[in-house]
Length: 208
Image (cartoon, rainbow, N blue to C red; front, top):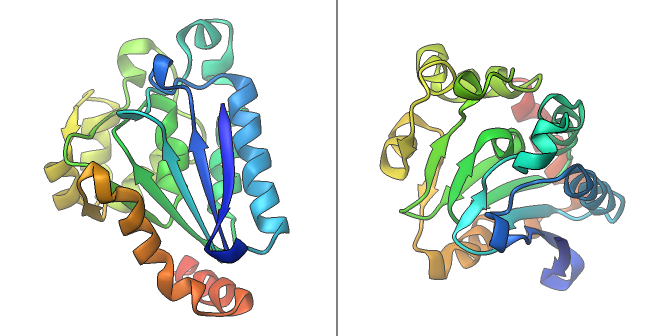
């Protein structure tokens, strides 16, 4: 349910959440497989990783049965977003649809977020009675500001792609049929550089 494909002569990895019949809802097994996929990408010294989903939803967050069984409060969410955030290469979230709940973590931890026009963004922790994983509120507030982060996390707001773009939650909007090509275009400059050059520039930007 987690795919990993090398692209661009092996210099880039495409990681795909592949459970479209369940809106790409995440189980603990899938979360750990995502961590493993990012680990392999770093070990293979790729210059860019694109993260996407299959179907019309990027991810609905936690699988509901797994969430009720304890996954909603598991440390594995923070482990995944931390793994994405510490990747030395360029990371691009190609959001093929709605990003909801716990799936925010990995999306926020990517360097760049592209989305389709019909994507929506919501994080219903207040309604569900869960605390968001460590790092999610902090990264969200850093991107869009504390007040807008409160609107999403505490006010339960559902944000459309055009508003998400104006807020800085996503960086560009692309039609579905060109989304992955657009992500690869964004990665092209990194692919033209050395692995060490990509890592050094990313490390400088992380200090800002």
